[in-house]
Length: 112
Image (cartoon, rainbow, N blue to C red; front, top):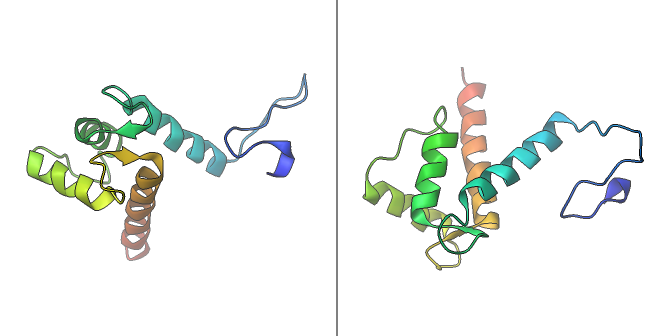
């Protein structure tokens, strides 16, 4: 990666120098942090179960998605995201979901 960092974490700055991340980089960290804030509350800490996904959507995406109240909606969302069929949402599947929501928001705001 540019700057000598690894793909998994931001690189450390030289001692005495502050690291200033771009808004995009801050957004990427926020996505990672949000995923891990909800994953692993039950079971695998690297995957979201249906209840964790529902809680994440209802708490973190309130302005872009309507609140999920019924189990049928949670089941449909998980089915759409769960590309490997394990009934959980891993980080790759979550990022694809965030990209789809972001693209839909972009289209919506583009036409306003």
